[in-house]
Amino acid sequence: MQKLELISFKLCPFVQRAVIVLRHKNIDFDVTYIDLQNKPEWFLKLSPTGRTPVLKVGDEVLFESAVIVEYLDEVTPPSLHPADPLIKAQNRAWMEFMGEIQRRIHGLYTASEESVFEQHRVAILGDLARLEAVYRGGTFFNGEEFNLIDAVMAPLCLRLELLREFTGMGLLENCPRLQQWSAVLLEMEAVRLSVVPEFPGLFRGMIERMGGVMAARLTAG
Image (cartoon, rainbow, N blue to C red; front, top):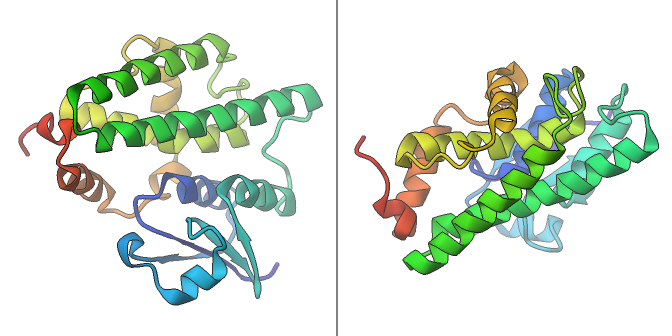
């Protein structure tokens, strides 16, 4: 296999998906982190959208996180997708839905007014309730096998857990099945090693710098 290099920033939830897949499959790769506020010119030449993550495969480049994780899964068998075409398609749809939840959570970080913050919070609770309703049960989303949809959910679970720890806001408190799923995912070695060791502190610092409603809710420590 050609050399794989992921390029992103340390707090990116979307590169974390790819790292989880690679670690779960024991595939060698490198990660290069950039300053999101001061993107180097060489990175902008690689990424047409200017967004992270980017994957270098030898001298070739892929961008957009969904494309990257699908490529990585396809070239490193066995696939982490379910074999059934309908279930696979349903999983992909819910993976997109999880991306929308992640974007709503970013809205929590940036909200400077209580009304906007509450609008995002209520929307997230509704989204999580929908996920709770379709969760297939078992250890993972589809049962007892770890699939790509689990890798996509894990970064979301990590951020929800840190928000609970830092602000006391339990967005999963009415979703017992998602709570159980989250606990399993966050204990997996591939998930624990998918972020830098200093991730919790960086995450908290990001919220503090936003200076919005969420920052005001941070507990001491």
